[in-house]
Amino acid sequence: MTRSRSVGKWNDPLIAIGLFAIGVLLYLVGLYKMWTDVGGVADVPIGVRIGMLALLCAIDSFRRVRPATALAAGAVIVAVDAALGPTLPMWLVLSDLTYAAVLYGTARLGRGVCSLTAVTVAALTALVYLSTRDVRAAAGAGVVTALFFGTPVWWALVIRRQVELTEAERERSRVHEALAALDREAAVAHERATMARDLHDVIASHLSAIAIHSEAALSTATLSSERGEPDDGLREMIGAIRSSSLAGLSEMRSMIELLHAGDCETPDPRSSPPRLTELPVLLNAARATGSAVDVAIDVDAAELPSVVDHTAYRITQEALTNALKHAPGAPISMSISLQHNALQIEIRNPIGPDISSPRARTRGLANMRHRAELLGGSLDALPVDGEWTVCAQLPVHTPNGTDR
Image (tube, rainbow, N blue to C red; front, side, top):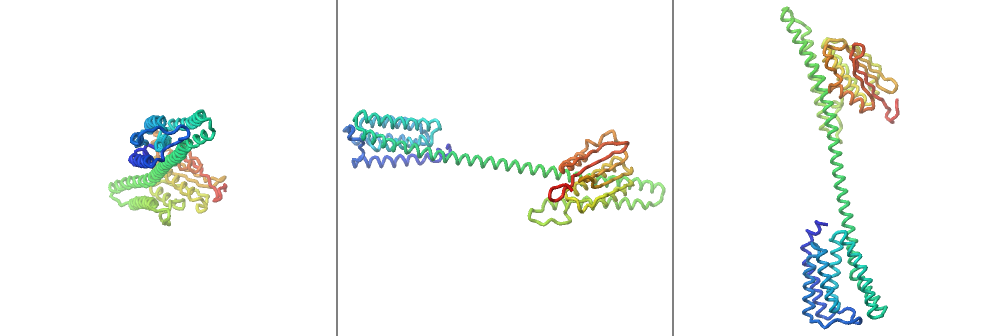
């Protein structure tokens, strides 16, 4: 409504000039008298009438920016005109002021004008009847007054209602846009958290393997140089370092390609998330560090849902990385099986010398637990009988949504 006032205020002088021109024409041709049978119109010079009309039209030029003030001032001038004998041009301008007060004024002003209009129509009808004792004259006065002032009030209320509905729809649209923006921000935050977990799993796993292999290679190289004997194991360790590096780069490339792929693009099979079928690569890397890895897998990975398969791979990858980091060279036992509609994963290794800083508070274990909980499963990581044990349960559902 405020914007409407500021934009349309330049049209008000044109409206006032148009009403003034119409009023002058009515005065000049003599079509300005009202209710001559009620008491006639006083013999007032046309120049005075036109001057009063000019003053009223000047007030009408402020109909939009000062609707209440303009209506009050206009009502005073029209009252003077009524005392001299009501004329049609003055009523035309006053009806426009009434319309502007309801449309552009406050809601309280609009209600007041509506009430005042009803009282005016009733009062004028009664006054004419008391003056003439003529029912037809009183009815005619009431109808004319209702047409002059009731119609503008009704039309202004209709337009004001439409404007309010438009503003409400615009505000609702802004709210929807804000909610959509919040949803986008939440989706971006969720994707960033997912990327952070995946990057941690990839980088931490492979870089930890590289660090362990490098340390073993340096130790072997030192012993070989002291003994003056070549060590064939050194070549194998360096090869393991190269394999871990290439695996890390491959997974990073796959993640980047997935992020760049559009919704309508066919994903490259080489960019699919790693699954349990690639578990031998992790096991070979772990064995290359000197750790004995005992594996028992009693499940067909090809039959697992892809999200469960990928989550199981990431949990296994992080658990092996932690075992190699905190207990280097210690034996590792792993079992993966499908029991009671849930994929059971258990990885054990002897507790290493750094048990003083519990692993339960590390980022890797938090990521593993979060991955399991996203699928409705659970993960526990704690020392049991001198061994660090990671136990995960991932629900497995059939494509129709029921348990297997």
